Image (tube, one colour):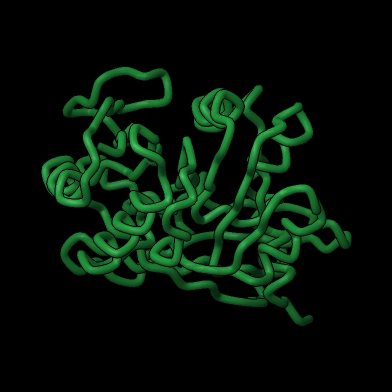
Amino acid sequence: MVFSDADAAALYDLLNPWDPDTRPDDGFYFPLVMGAESVLDVGCGTGAMLRLARERGHRGRLVGLDPDAAALDRARRRADIEWVLGTAAESESGVGFRLATMTGHAFQSLLTDHDVRASLGAIHGALRPGGRFVFETRHPQARAWEGWTHTNPDDVVDVVDETGRALRYWHDVESVDGDVVTITGTVAQPDGTVLRVLREGLRFLDIAALNGILAEAGFEVEAQFGDWNREPVTGASREIITIARRG
């Protein structure tokens, strides 16, 4: 059985349904999007957030940017939004967006200081003065990767995809090198027959490093939260949710 890039994009939607009415993370972002007349969603994936914004009445400019062509193919089912193939560092300068977002922990895919600086510089350039960049990254103190294993029943998911195929999905940690964790996501048949292994690296920056590089890029941290209820960051927080403003 072949499991294509298009299948992987469809599986992402299945595993990560975008619903601000039931999911606290989506519920955090959605009012910000609906309240901004122009939005750049960096790492938009299949575009679920912007598509829902349009469905619920957003009339301003919505642009989704992502380097995954298969994900954008799904996003382009909605033609009244601009979909751009590219990385965060390729955000268009001088556009004057009111809001830029990186949801779904997409910020953690920026693995080096160079990647982060180039991306933040481009996002800064895409915003108007006073524009906001809102994103989240997992707090390294929570060591979330320790639960990403096929031996953890909470990390093994059984689903039926849109073609009717029964699939099983789980994670495993391949390596931990400093603040970068490399993981694999395995797509299998219910009997364990592996169809595809998806690999990605995630960087876990602490608050000091994160805020330092934001300041260097010309952003002022307006607020940071440790959870989706807007509680402050503490020694028990699992997230670093940041609202940064372009100076």
